[in-house]
Image (cartoon, rainbow, N blue to C red; front, side, top):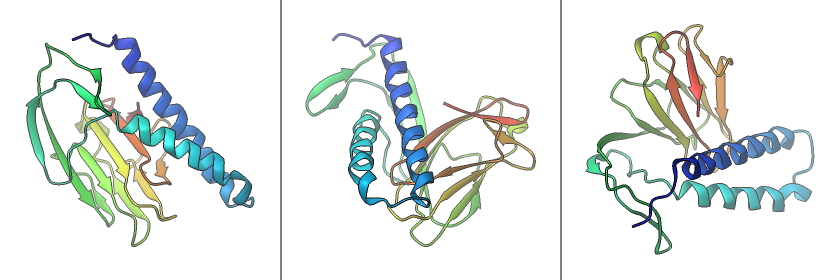
Length: 182
């Protein structure tokens, strides 16, 4: 099986980030303007983001996996494989009310159907190199608000908001006072 070069994977991740940024900007403008003319653009961007997010494997909430990564198939086409992949373990947690992210959580799915949900990150200083994925899973206009502990920042901001269904963010602690977005 052919392997996709590392920079191809980085290109996919960059595309996801760019689409997320573009959608976030569109949603910020939503409160200022009539949505009707933008509806088609937003739907097209959401389809693009959805396609790129389906290139990742995320298990269902509550499932803990420990397997060797292998081929990833999308619509019966091989996208990625690694004969030298190592075992990983991921814990998926579904939350629907404001809470603090626990040390055992790897992937957090946020359901904001009942209102805004604030996730407080653990102190970055105690989490050197920790990796988290957080994703908003509902289609309401409620926000998933990610808040740094105390004065900790998230890419130089005190909070980060996920505004639309399937918007996701990947965070890594710098071990001092910041969570970096990837």
